[in-house]
Length: 433
Image (cartoon, rainbow, N blue to C red; front, side, top):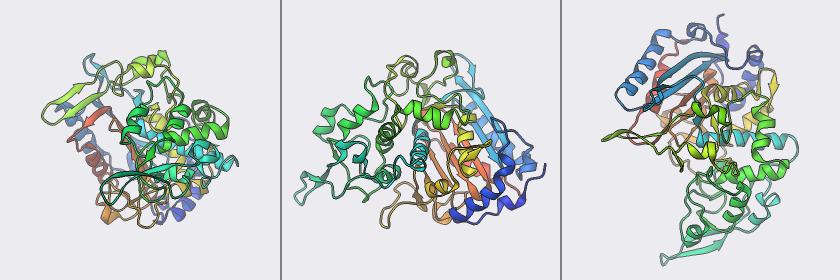
């Protein structure tokens, strides 16, 4: 069926883009889970040009740069391309499959951020509320500063941290906090799957520590969404896993998205590899630690990390993104209002607060947002929102092109790989209408 060409001509402001998208999304809402396929040509994408994408990623696997990967491209509410490359487990000769389960790490943040907006829509919180309304230990926080003599001094925060600060990573709470207090706390890194305490207890101990910046003054990527997950537990009266299951995962039929894997799905979990240009791929240890298999299967199952804890499949995550692209509704199920999606996908960083990792981009309520395509310097569109995960996965949603892309692999660290940039170039070069 020919696509509706008006859907590829959205205005560039996110408000107008989603207003137009809402009016035209009805044709997608009866799609069954997962996203139904359609001939790429019917979606304005060249099949011949998509072969360049397949060839490139197949070559990266064959050359030993990637162990395996899944690429899903959807446009106008239908799946235009599903590329499956390499192996889930090289040593066992286990091929990568469509239903392979991946550690999505920081891609968890988008799902938890949607959870916060759901609670705002239900009247159970406001994103401008102080965090201390739900977590009293955050009523008075401190910041580590350097004085004129070069000494580190601990001073009171200038103002309370808000939920909006957590959503935008402007609370001042970074990963790997420095100093003796942080070292003594035992809170290190972002991996919580092996913790034998609920996230609420971990977050309680965080509140006692000095932070890296005053609220609202800097973008500091860190434990914000883990703290947000604890807020959601208090505001909803449910553990984070139950809340997300009831409000997002079950309604969207994201049946393969979990904090910890059911035993019957163990053989679908992808192995983690590391990549270095001078050494190629090496398998990570199977047991223990952030790269192992064991904690997601046999761990204590007590810590539900809103910042990095979920596992998922490409199909599941594409459904979640399609819901956002369609203004908060998918397959006849409304998760959020269109206005909440608009609010999430606009830049919220105050004047003078710079997104540190990419020119031309800001940050919304859980997503990087492209604001200036020339400064951004890669194919895309103004209004695009995206993020990725520590195991080298990524995604983006482009409302102007009615497009979403999910890329899952399991490589940590991934030093020297240019697969993300190549993927972006290869997806956009295939769009011909």
